[in-house]
Image 1 (cartoon, helix red, strand yellow):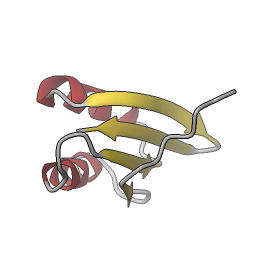
Image 2 (cartoon, rainbow, N blue to C red; image 1 turned 90 degrees about the vertical axis):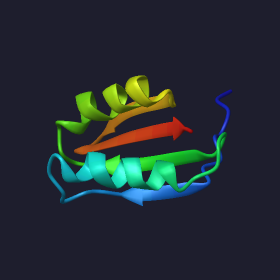
Image 3 (cartoon, one colour; image 1 turned 45 degrees about the horizontal axis):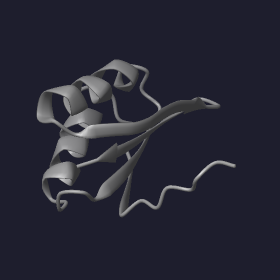
Length: 78
């Protein structure tokens, strides 16, 4: 049985291309409190590499990353 993750905020960056999704994601995460969870929905394929790299550099935890019918979903804990 999968555990449902409750996100504190959702950010829809569909329709934006690099570097805009990364900039919007960084801004959203900076505004959040430590431990809060952000769900990001994107459709730019470059986010599959740039958002996990952002997490690694900034020390955020990438909880989940998946592809869903042309959309890329990221669950990140600050």
